Image 1 (cartoon, one colour):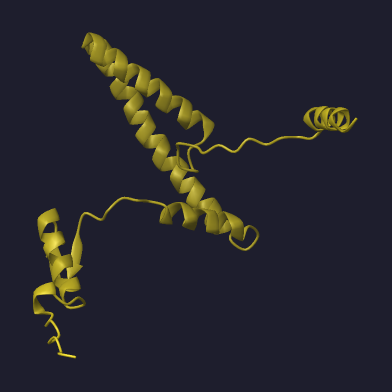
Image 2 (cartoon, one colour):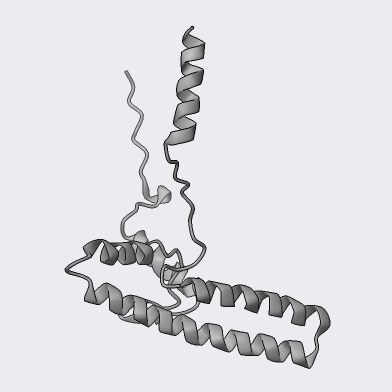
Length: 150
């Protein structure tokens, strides 16, 4: 009797309770549907150009690439303008933008330490090592305690 009850309840839930699927966009929030479609067309044109290496396919790809750059800048500027203008009425949009910027995992290309500019990854690593070396004690500098006779 209990299994029949649960079966009926589960069927009712599946039929009448709305479900929501969470998915993550692979594009920044300012990319609208038209720009995403244009990017897909550009990818297809690029694949076509790589396959046949003709001048016409390159021209098509080049034109789509140029359009993508233009519309991407335009959409981003429009998005930022909307976030700015709606800051008081929609602060959630502002914080969504901030959260999106914080989730960027790219490393900076230029770093400064002690007023010195570092661009090479080896130099950046050495600067980090220099900075953190003052905070840690080298294992060689630890003096072992004298054993005591009991």
